[in-house]
Length: 166
Image 1 (cartoon, rainbow, N blue to C red):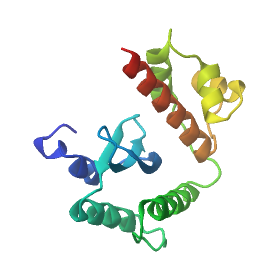
Image 2 (spheres, rainbow, N blue to C red):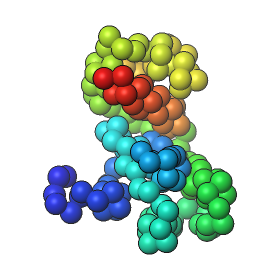
Image 3 (tube, helix red, strand yellow):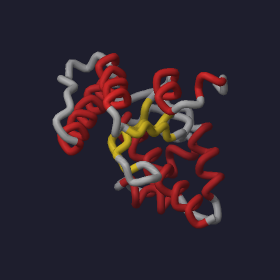
């Protein structure tokens, strides 16, 4: 969805309607604290949260996930723990196994060809190479949700490294 309303990171966050494969806090391009989500397409939506308005909207977003986690901000370290609790409850909703279409994974692996291999993805994700291979080839149809999260987080990290070297 590429509407004019989807340009601001907060708006992109609020408009996103798919699975989330990772979320947390990280430094933005200027080194300021930022909330991020990793979408199922591999997009990394990042919102800097140094102003009250941004922080408040991110807290509202987390509350709308209806996880039962008390979303409050005391400091950034504590807030990151809250985000991880929200993500953990969110992931548990998928159950142990989820239906998985490997089309998007194959696309990302193809884009990394010549820069990184399935072994690199597996190493960063903390998984066996055969797990990544089985997912890429479509052998595994019902993987664990958090396995998929780890694979996509590793792919994002490798894509980010590749972009930094370009």
